[in-house]
Length: 52
Image 1 (cartoon, rainbow, N blue to C red):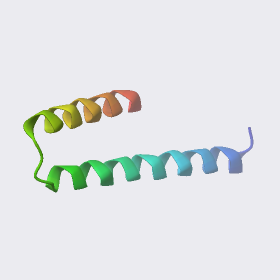
Image 2: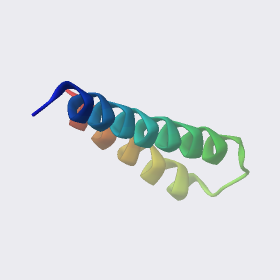
Image 3: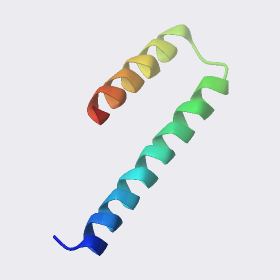
Image 4: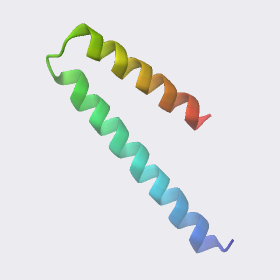
């Protein structure tokens, strides 16, 4: 794989990660039922584990 392809892939992944982080942050600011908060925390944990 050439360098520009690797760079594009990394940029796309970073963009997705930033979008996910932005959405999670917006979710945290909303008044929501506790169960939804629990599910959002589980989602964040799974996403964090995927990064490892």
